[in-house]
Length: 122
Image (cartoon, rainbow, N blue to C red; front, side):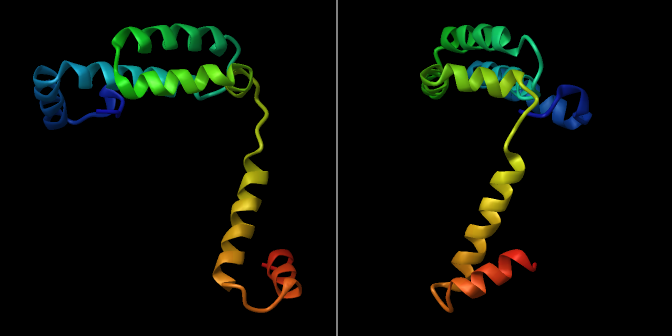
């Protein structure tokens, strides 16, 4: 459902058509998800496109999307920045995740010195 239709095999296209005929809500959901996915690559103007997407998602009246759109509106300035600016903190988050994984693997054994050694000398 969420794959680009151009990348589907003929058998998958047939299955998708059957699903769309059986459940039009799934088709609407898939279209909205594809539209949102297109916004995730930062570009100028994505903030305006997001406003249009939110209006379309609310018009579809799908309960889970209503919750998502409400969450996006709560911190709209941050969402707009994430969708329009080329800056991100992905590397920092990766380091944090790696540090937490190492800490969990230790299960409280040893001390800070060993944790420091494992982080600095992978």
